[in-house]
Image 1 (tube, chains in turn brown, green):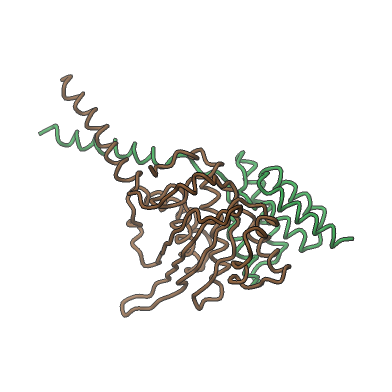
Image 2 (cartoon, rainbow over the protein chains, first blue to last red; image 1 turned 135 degrees about the vertical axis):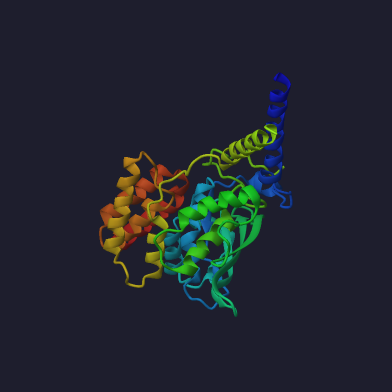
Length: 225
Length: 122
C-alpha cells in the first residue's frame, strides 16, 4: 500500500506543477527589463482617447481603470481630480492631454508612470443573430522621469461572451473573479463591458500583463521569467 | 477498478489547491462603490447630486472601517473634490490630508491641490 500512495503524491505534485507551468507562467512575449528597472509605484491614468462614436466612452473607461491597477499594488492618482486639473489648465480633450510633455506631468502630479489609453471600440454592435456591447482598448505605460515605454497591451470584451470561458486558463479565471467585482449595480451594458476590458487590460499577473506594484504582496514575485 | 476514480479525485483536489494558490491574496481594498460614484461624477448627468454622492462615499468609509479594511487610492481625494465643489473647504482639506496620510505617493499632487485651493480662497 505504501508504494501507490507515494505514487499518488508524486502524481499530485506533477499535476500541480504542470498546472502551474501551463496556467500561471505565461508564454514570455513581453520584455519587462525597463519595467523592472523603473519600479513604478504610482500611476497617473490620463483620460483615454476615444476613437469610438460613443461620447461617454472616455469617462466610462476612466472610471473603470482604478480597480485593476490598485488591486495590482499601485497607487493610482485620483482620476476625477486629475481630469479636473487638466480642465483648469485649459485641456478638455483627451488627445490634447496626451500631448503634455512627461516632465510637466511629473512636475504637477508627481507620479512615477503615466498610463495612456485609447478606446478603439465602445458600444453596441448588431449582427444578424444578436446584438452585443463591445469595448476594445489599448494602453501604454510610460515612465514619467525618462519617457521610456515600460509596457503596452490591448484587450477586448463583449457582452456576448460565454461567461464560463473568459479565456487564458488560470489567468482567465483570475480575471473572471475580478470581473465579478465589477459587475455591480450599474445598469449600463457598455460600461460593464468596459469594466471587463479594463480588468483584462490592466490586471497584474496576467500573461503579458502589468507586473505587480509595491503595495501588492505579490510584488517582485511575477511569473514572467 | 477502484484506482481510477480515486486518482481522478486526487488530481481534481490538486488542481483545486493549485487554483487557490494562484488566486493569491484577497482584495487589497474595500471598494464600496467608489468606481460607480466616480462614473456618476464624471458623467454628470444629473442622476445623482454631489450631496448624494458624498453620502454614499461617507457610508463606504464607515463600512470599510467596520471591516477593518482600507478604502482604495483616490477615495478620500475624490471625496475631497466633492466637498470642495459643495463649498465645504475644511472637509475637503481634511479628506485630502487623509489621502496623503494613507498614500504618501499622493503627497506632491495633494500639496499642489491644497496650494491651489488656498490661492483661490484668498
